[in-house]
Length: 306
Image (tube, rainbow, N blue to C red; front, top):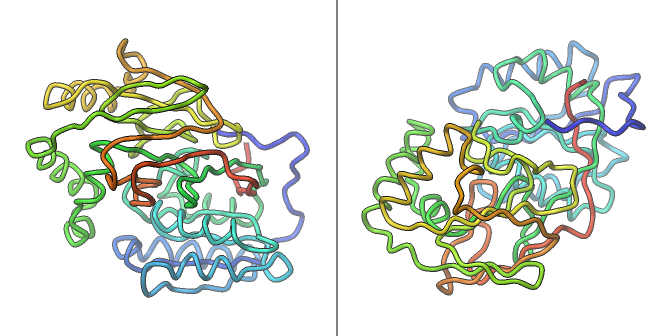
């Protein structure tokens, strides 16, 4: 969980909030979204809501935001919605701060900042009065991400996921697709170039935060407020590798496996089959080869009171 800078001060008056809401991501949590909005208004916030209708809307809405009009843009949806809002804010001239109303499947950003997705009161109070923290997004082939970017089996699973099944079953859709891919994926070799060295593996994840795919710690030393990438390189392939890593991750022991390499860097290159997918924050954001680095500018993120 990241902590606010010592100089960070919570606002003395409620904020002006633009809520960018993905109705598809929030379909199973519609009451939660309504509760958060109601509580924000009760806390004295000026709240404007905009619903997305298709992919790209959240990014466009965020890009048009200006700090003169809004103090905070709250992404109400899953981590994919957050990713779109981040990309919009990074392109805005005077971007407001970012906040989150977690309505998705994994809600990794909420986990990173210590925000309970089911606690509507805490979500609203964080958006209204929480301190801001400078965070360092990264960029992959021109596309920003805030949490993680991965190549290999995880990206293949994201690329193959059935959207309708995901809407109906949530995390179960990823389990189904992982099993399906395990029997058909050939685990091609991936090269990671960072700090003047080349590493070999079958899967690589550049982490900006500690968590991966939910409440599972992949990079214990990572933090959104650190200006670095924490890179995990997994060398084993096939069903044996999938079982080994698939069992270690939920136990938060992935980092303890002796063959898993951990590298910190400010930039990296991932090489592999040309055109293979790269997932970022749970969506496909680029194709290999991929150049990944810290973004040129930072972002303000609203986090809970410590």
